Length: 436
Image (cartoon, rainbow, N blue to C red; front, side, top):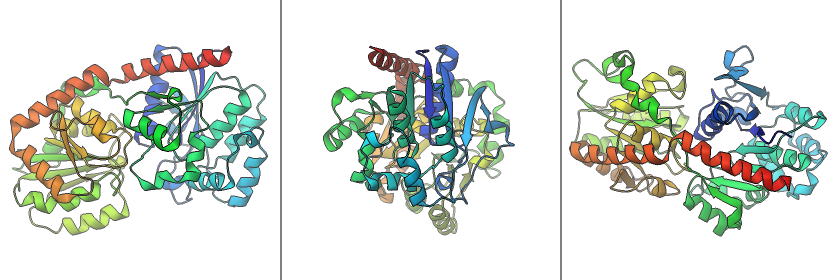
């Protein structure tokens, strides 16, 4: 067996965009090019989260170039079966060799199946194949059904199974005891922070030697070398700010525009900010939600409100030049989220030498050093958010000090090259342990 033959089973893959997807994408690309791994990627055809369990969600079509190839890597995408009853799905899973040995409750299986994605053709492909030869499986994103597929396959092939859960332990939805059954079944968990590790140990009972802490990364040079591009072509200030307002301040948010990420809290903070600072633009990049759109329609009616709203449809991907330009041009990066196991966007902001504001909840207090490279605010507290934004916008030296500290931290500790090197060592240690 090739000790560098690894199976990746992410929930979704690019052009689906979130930190969990990007994490496995960059690992696959670096491992293939630098460490000569053979990475096989099997995933769903979902682009948005809705598609994981709803036929009206957004999917990538087979005719699209990125359906099969992304950055020279082959992607095996399978359609999600929505027209199969939950009872039929349960019967199907229970017939698979190896499932019974997991000892999962019916409630656990039921809830994971409802979360999706249910990939019946992928299941059939794997369990009808006679030449499955992998040294390790790596999956991600609790609590979606690809985790259970990974566990069944790992037991079937008798190989180690690694999970990077991105466990949002400050979100009550993730603390369902029946969902937590699955976490305990993996050979190794990779957490992004020590706070996540401690939670899994103290609240779920995972033993310490089954958890390794490896943070997220950033392509630092993409931001450092941005000046080499023709900035005016991608500048938000040049192309989207109103005439005569290019010197206005800019506050940036990048992520899902929902309550969990803090986008709604930012909108609610805008009236308080405008009481002190009126020459300001708020830029939101990411997929919209109905709740965000409702709040946006109310805030947009206020006097002096300037909001630029960009979605992934306006961008070309993670390294879109308009997105990088937005980070470089912003005065503050603001994402007061409670649903981040780490937050790649904070690293992107620091790579662009910008101060950040995050919520003092979950794993974020370990990522952001309060008053050193950013500020922490109370989650969903518009007044606290407004006060921190106003303070940073008023003091340029403070913005520079915090942004510079973040940039140095990223350069020394949080590049994807560093993260891949640490993960490579974990893979090989685990594979050799199983081979003995």
